[in-house]
Length: 446
Ligand SMILES: Cc1cc2nc3c(=O)[nH]c(=O)nc-3n(C[C@H](O)[C@H](O)[C@H](O)COP(=O)(O)OP(=O)(O)OC[C@H]3O[C@@H](n4cnc5c(N)ncnc54)[C@H](O)[C@@H]3O)c2cc1C
Ligand code: SF4
Ligand code: SF4
Image (cartoon, rainbow, N blue to C red; front, side, top):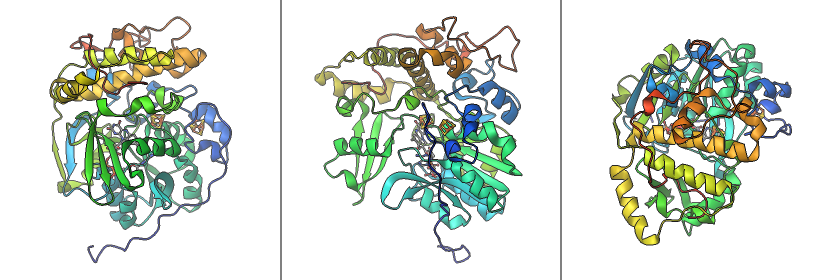
């Protein structure tokens, strides 16, 4: 370590109150705050107002004339990027935590609010406030599960932190933005990661147990954009498994909670900067959304290697196949099985001819939208109207899913003429050709 750097300490993890009982909830922390009733205004799962918050945070809502914004939310520019050198222990190259470290090093913020691993379980997220730049290294990597990140906003204010950076997943960032103006911070930087298919840490351990004989030695798992899951182990081994070979059929139907099957913000549209990998073809994928996002990116200086993202393949067949399987699984029926002999062939073909780069990210966005509509229709039909924003209907329209009169939200995109309420197909989807094709992530029994 550089001698000029402070040695690592323990990030601050103040005690957190109990969660209030809630229906659809990922325990973002607001129900544990001094004013738990704010959930009604803050929650992604109650009555979100994406156009309104996009307008406030980015100066405009997503623009249908910029086709990819329907998929990914408002952005200035997208990059395919890597941090040089990649940081050990990071989920990808460590861009998210390095930005937090740089903000602390330069004195731009008093603290970074993010997740560290539970000392007793590396997969369990624990919210922490980091003030020592060297401690950001302990927060690297992905944990599976929910933890009340925003419950630390009040302790942060009480300790006198006025300039804060938050690294969070979309359901946390939605609540943060919804309450931002009443939180009283002088400056707030929001680094968001995309998120999908989260579940409880307990359930995730069940999944790990299906993947290896020694699940406790798994230190890393990632669903890569090349249709493989990568595992790393304590002894330095690594292993990749094609998606089609995952033991999905052995998971219970409720393995993924309804929250994460009906989540409408895959790409963290309200972050200043989204740091993911989905559109990055093996590198990371950045969406710079506003001035503050540019400022965050600039903290990395020459440590960042960036290029334009690429796009290849056609997503239509994959999304259509996924939709059929979600419909069957949601109805309690076995999904269309692929014969065992065909799996290696399709597993070999998918990374080569399936959607890649930005087209892969668009496919995942449409799949998430399809899941949202199908699962809510089956389990909470009354919630579609308040919970599903117009951009989700835009994404599913070309797959034959259109809102009934009682399902359509009456929120008008503030950057659009009042007549348009968000049900037209996405302009960016016009090269999509629905047809038979393999699902990207298998649903239910395979
Ligand atoms: C449950 C989950 C699902 C994800 N799914 C996708 C996806 O489908 N597509 C995609 O492009 N990206 C996804 N991501 C983001 C991806 O895993 C990486 O975090 C991101 O690409 C940044 O990589 P990095 O190397 O820059 O991160 P690092 O520098 O390693 O930092 C990772 C950051 O994520 C935080 N974090 C880790 N686990 C959690 C958690 N459970 N809740 C909240 N914050 C957490 C850490 O505290 C840290 O600040 C997901 C993340 C999570 C937590
Ligand atoms: S996710 Fe957050 S805002 Fe929504 S109900 Fe749970 S605690 Fe409240
Ligand atoms: S998938 Fe959506 S609801 Fe689930 S944890 Fe991620 S952001 Fe939250």
